[in-house]
Length: 171
Image (cartoon, rainbow, N blue to C red; front, side, top):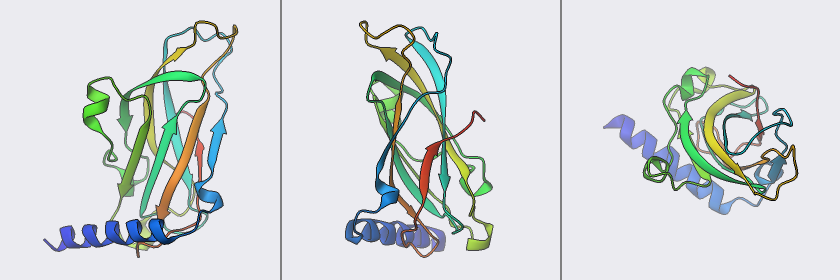
C-alpha cells in the first residue's frame, strides 16, 4: 500500500510539473535521420533504441513519443531499458500495439528507487520495434526518419529535469 501511495504521489507531481512548467529545450521535437543502409526495401522491420541523457541528474520518470514524418509505422513491440531502474517494460497502449493499429507510440516509465540508484548518465530506456512502410513513390534508397519528442523527464521528487532524448545504438 505504501508503494502504491508513493507511485501515485510521484506521478501526480510529474503531471503537475509538466502542466505548470513552461516549454523547454528538452521538450523540443527532434527529427533524427535513420542510419540504416540506403538499400532498405519496404516494408521492413527495425529496432529503434531510445536513449535519455538526464545530464547528471537522477532519472526517476520519463515520457516520450516516437513517430515518423516520412513513413507509415506499425509499432510491433517494445522492450525495457538497460538500467535496473527501468528493467520492467515501460507503459504504453498495449491494445493498440497488439491490434496492429499503433502508427506512433507514447511510452512512459517511473522508478521508485532512491536517487543514488537511478541513472544519471545517458541510458537506453526502451527499444521500440517497428514495421516501416515507405510511400510507393519514395526515391530509391529512402529510409525512415524517426521523430522523438521528450514529453517529460523527472527526478525522485517529481520535479522536471533537463534531459536530452535521442536514438541510440542498437542494443
